[in-house]
Amino acid sequence: MNLLFISLGLTLLILGGNWLLKSAVGLSLKLNIPKIVIGMTVVSLATSAPELIVSIKSALIGFPDLAMGNVIGSNVANLGLVLAATISLSAIEVEKSFYKTDWPVMMIASIMLFGFIYFDSTLQRYEGAILFIMLTLFLIYLLKFQKKAVVEEKHEETEIPLYKIVLFLALGGVALWGGSELLINGAVGMAETYGVSKRVIAVTIVSVGTSIPELAASIIAVLKKEKAISLGNLIGSNMFNILAVLGITAMIKPIKINDPGLLDNDILWMLGISFLILPLVFIPKGLRLGWRDGIILLILYGVFVATTLA
Image (cartoon, rainbow, N blue to C red; front, side, top):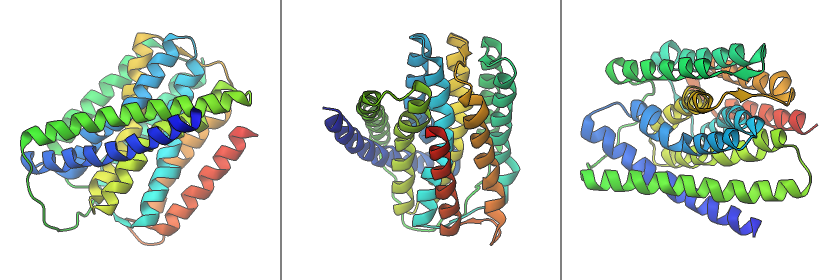
C-alpha cells in the first residue's frame, strides 16, 4: 500500500507541475508581468502549500520537530537537490537583480529564523508575525518594482483564455497537494517501520516529499525553456517556507523544538547551502549556474543526508 501511495503521489505531482506551469505562463502573458515575479508568487505559493499543510498539522497534533524539520529540510532540498537537478539539465543565466534583491531576502529570512530559534529553541507567536509581515512587505515590493532577474529565452508564446488559467491553477494546486500527501503518507509509513525518529523523517523523507512539487515544476519549466519561472520558484519557495509556512504555523501555535539536531546540524546546513548559491553564481563564469554547480550542490546534499542519518 505504501508503494502504491508513492507511485500515485509522484504521478499527481508531475501532472500538477505541468498544469501549474501553464497557468503561470498564461498569467504572466496576460498581466505583462515578468515571469520570475510569477514564479516567486503564484508558483511558489502553490508549491509551498504541502509544507504549509504538513507544518500546521504537525504543530497542532503535537509534533513540532516535524513542522520545523519539514521546512528546514525542504529548503536544503530545494537548493541541494531541486536546483542541482535543474541546472544539471540546462544552465541558467542570472542578472543583477538576483543578487541585489532575491538572494539577499532569502538569506535575511534564513538568518532571522536562525536568530529566533537558536537561543530559546522556540519560534514564538510574535516572531511568526514578524516573519509574515516581512513576506507581505517583500511581495508588495516585488509586484511594484522587481525587474527580470533571469535572461529569458525568446520563443513563440500564445495567450490562453482566463478560464483556462484559473482551471490549470486549480488543477495544479490540488494535484500537487494530493500528490504530496500520498507521497508523504507512503514514505513515512515505510520509514516508521524501521523506527526512524520524527526529526530524521522530517528533514529527509518528508522534506523531499514536499519538495517534489518544486522539482516537478522546475524541471518541467526548464524543459519548456521557462527558466525564469524555475529559478524564481525555488528562491520564492524557500522564502515562502520560512516567512509564510513557519510564520503562519507559529502564529497559530508556537513551535517548540525538542530535537537538538535541528539546531546543531540541520539549520546550519540550510544557512550554508543558501549562502553558497551566491559564489556559485559568479564562479567560474559570472552570473551563471551550470552543470558543475549542480554536481557540487548534489554532493553537499548527499553529505547533509548522511550526517542527518548518522
